[in-house]
Amino acid sequence: MKNLVSAAFMAAMLSLFAVQASAETNTLERVLESGTLRVCSPGDYRPFSFTEDGEHFEGLDVDLVASLASSLDDADVEFVKTTWSDLMTDFTSGKCDIGVGGISVTLERQQQAFFSVPYMINGKTPLVRCEDVDKYQTIEDINQPDVRVIFNPGGSNETFAKTKLADADLILYKDNVGIFNELVENRADVFVNEAAEGRVQSKRHPELCAVNPDDPLKYAEMAYLLPQGDVVFKHYVDQWFHLQKASGAYAELEQQWLPAD
Image 1 (cartoon, rainbow, N blue to C red):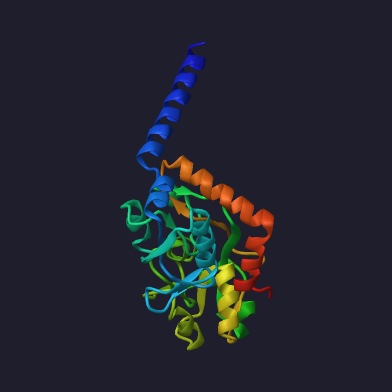
Image 2: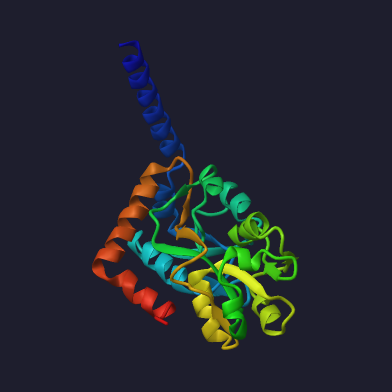
C-alpha cells in the first residue's frame, strides 16, 4: 500500500510540474499573440532547410513550418540562422519557438528539449565517389586508418564519426555545404550523413553515390525541437503533423523535395 501511495504521489507531482512548466512556457499563446513563429535552423542541410545568404530559406522543413504558421492564425515565419554546434544553445536560450532542418532525435537533445512526433525515418549512410561504393559497405570497411572520413561539426554526423569510426583518418570540415566537393575532389573518401541528404546530394553531384540508403548503418528519426515542458505546444504540433500526413499534404511535399531514386 505504501508503494502504491508513493507512486500515486509521484505521478501527481509530475503532472503538477508539467502543468506549471506549460503555464510558464506557453509557446502557442505567445505565437498567437505576437503573430510570429520563430524558427531556429542551421540552413545547410538539403533537402530539409538550406540558405545561401542566411536570410532566405528553402526546403521541405521550410514549406512545412510555413504550413504550421498558417494554422496559427497566419503567423509570420521568422528564421533564426544557427549552426549545428550552437543549435541547442540558441534553442534553449529562447531565441526561437521551434527548431527544424533535418534534426535527428537523440537522447542528448531530449534532455534539453521536447521533440515532436517523428516525421521521417532516416539513418546514417555513407556518401562516397561512385567507383568506391563496393569498398565502403560496412562500418568495418570504413573504420580503417587509410580511409579519410570527413564530417561537419556540432551534430550527429560528428558524433557518429567520432564514436563509430574512431580508427579512420578523421577530417573535420567547417560546414555541411562545401563538404561534398571534398569528396568529389578526392580530398576525402567517405562522408557519413543521413540517407535523405545522401540521395539529394548524389543527384546534385553525379560523381557521388549513397551506399545502401535503404539499409543505413544506424537507424535515425527526424523531428522538430520544441520547448521543454510545453506540453500544450507539443500536442498542437503533433496533431498538426498527424493531419499533414493523413491529408496527403506531407507526402506531396516530401515527393517534391526528396524524389524517388
